[in-house]
Structures are given as C-alpha cells and as structure tokens.
Image (cartoon, rainbow, N blue to C red; front, side, top):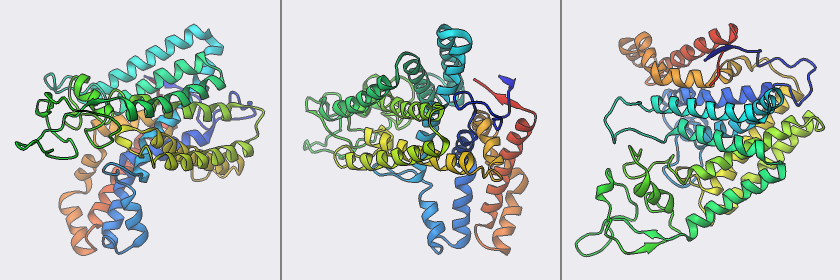
Length: 415
C-alpha cells in the first residue's frame, strides 16, 4: 500500500543501529535496473557496434544472459542479490518493529507481509487467468516471500552464532541430500532399453518413466537430480520447465541460505561498534572468501542456478557482499553520491517498478513511442541496432520517470 515514508537518504546524526544506509537502497536499485531494461540496453549497444566487433561490449552482452545450466554469469547474480538484500533489510525493519511493538507484533508483521507478497506473486504469474493445473504456485516472487518468512523468523529467534550455524546446516544439509539421497531415474528409455537422453526435458510429467525401478543419487543434470524429482513427484500446478521448476520445493531451502547471508551482512552494517570503513572491508574480504570457497566447492557440487546449489549460494552471496562493500565504500565512506539518484528512485520502489514492468510492460509501451517505422528508420539511416537502442532507452526512461515521480512525492509501496 502507498505510504508516506522518510526519504531513503535521511541519515542525520542517528546511530548505525537505526540509520538507513543509502548504499543498500542504491545497490537494490542497481540490481533491479538490470531486470527492467538495462540488459536490453547493453545488448542493443553490442548490436549497434556489430556483434562481436567490440570485445568489451560483446563480453558485457554475453554476461547478461543466464548460463544454460552449469557456471556463473553476471545475470545469474541478479535474483540472488535481491534475495540477499531482502536479508539485509530484515535486520533493520524487524529490529525497529520488535523495539516499537514487541516480538509478537514483529511476528504478526512477518506473517502479514509474507501472505501479501505471496498473493502478489500469484497475481504476477497470471493469477487465476488460466484453468488448473496451468497455474504456477512457485516463482520468483513466491521464492522471495518464502525466503523472507523463514529468514525473518530465524532472525527473531536466533543469536548471530545461531544464524551462522543455521546457514551452515542449510548449505551442508542441501548438499548431503542432493549427493546422497537416492531417487528413481525417470528418464525415458528407447525400445532397446537405452536412455533417450542424459538430460530430462519433457513438457508433461506423464512422459516420465514412472515405472522405473533404477534408483540413482548424486546426479545434477537437468531433470535428473533430487530437487527436480521432488518437483516432478510433488509440485502441483504449472512447472516452468515442463516437469520441474527452477524455483521449486527443495531448491528454496538453499535460497533461504542466501537470505541468511544477507541477514549476517545486515547485522554487520547495524553494528555501531564497527566503523564504516571497517564494514566495507569486511564485506569485501568476506565476499571474496565466499566466492573462492564457492567455486572450490563447485568442483564437487557444481555452481548451478536452476537448482540453487550450495556452491552457487556462496558464489552469488559473495559477489553480493562485495558489491555491497563497494557501494558502501563509495557512498558511506567517501560520501560520493552525485551518481546515486536514479538508483535510489528504483531501489526505494523496487517492487513497484517490478510489478509495473510486468503489468504495463515498459518495452511494449516504448514501441508505441519509438517502434515501427521510427526504429526501422534509425536502423536504415544510422546502423543496424540503432532502433533497438532507442527502444531500450525509452523503456528505461519510462520506468525511471515513474519511480522518480513516486520518490519526489515520498510515495513508497510497502508490502
């Protein structure tokens, strides 16, 4: 609901335990901008330069697509970084709620926000516009809601050491389940009994080899792993990839670990006994160590976004912490803020711009102003890709105009 809220840049002389960090809002805005159009801008620049002709642009463009399966690209950081920042925000919002209304009020706030966000998630995915079972019960916003719920409850109930122990248990427990728990091999086989494919990509769970008596474990191929088997067997409704979902049941467990990493980062930022410079260094150092450990673990438990492996949690969480440390250094320590307004507009109303892009479609709206003959004329008279570049600029501009309008009037959507 729209509410009047203090400006995200308000800091004054308040202590670290209650102040609002501009760096967190700015990083959230930076993250969200890639979702609502900045990626298209880079792809358009690469096409304008002649795909592959500019080494730097082509590299950046290649980083703005998800890895098909194993590995890590910058675009694989966008979703987990938002979950990480949810964890950071939990520390400040729930500390204030518990102080003002007590733990009971904080728990009620958690349950209310979870319920509203989950309902919004269902609407975002199409709501009840289609007949059952073509309704998706788990998706990006649904996962954020679940991560928020469990990380928030953990934050209220556990001390810092307990949160660290819980995080370690989640990551190690998920790895142990994925590596050691046996499950039926549902891959279809040909008339000769040979596997049709090492991977399992089907459009309907009815196509799976439900009569299989062969049990396997420690597999991490698409459709052939414990997380996807649980989706195939137990997840009702629409599954994004036919028989499994990248935001399915079991892989939500390590995603909660990503949110817990954010909670730990938030506790560091909230600690008044640690100076801003030290906070930035801790975030950069711990983040770098997390990335290194994640890739090392990835030798045994591969870095895979679509099953949110424990190694992926450490890699994505580490990069998120490093970026937060860099933003904190520039904004809070060096006080260089002239470049932050667009990111603050987006970061302060991230859910608003995310929903607006889904409902309105900034790219679709941009075509009404600069598509058709306008874009085609630029392609003919300037260079191929110029039309796409204009459409990307207009789409991003529409989104920024919206959130700036809300920001200036101090209207922030709070769920």
